[in-house]
Image 1 (tube, one colour):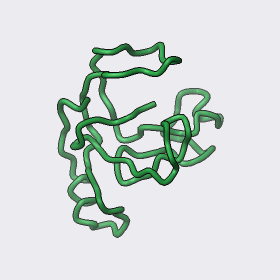
Image 2: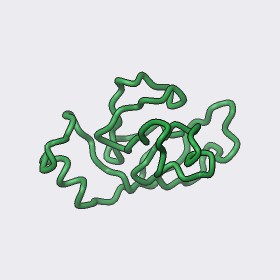
Image 3: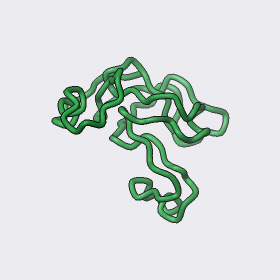
Length: 112
């Protein structure tokens, strides 16, 4: 559940399509704070009710050398997934790879 979301200049640029890369419809926001409302059966690092913070990267391949050492921002086994204006390419997000990501101004997100 999203509780707070900051405003970043890139949110404004993407909503105005200044980069020419915006996938509409768009819901920006990548600096967000929320509460865990559900966890999967294999999740051990957070529990329902925990406070969480989310940055711009919400997922990666989790299999390349960069991901293996916790550097998902450098994922080259696939492309990391942005909090918004991107697609859920990896099945571990419960995702259809054609499913668009929506950011912190939406009510909630599914995160790995």
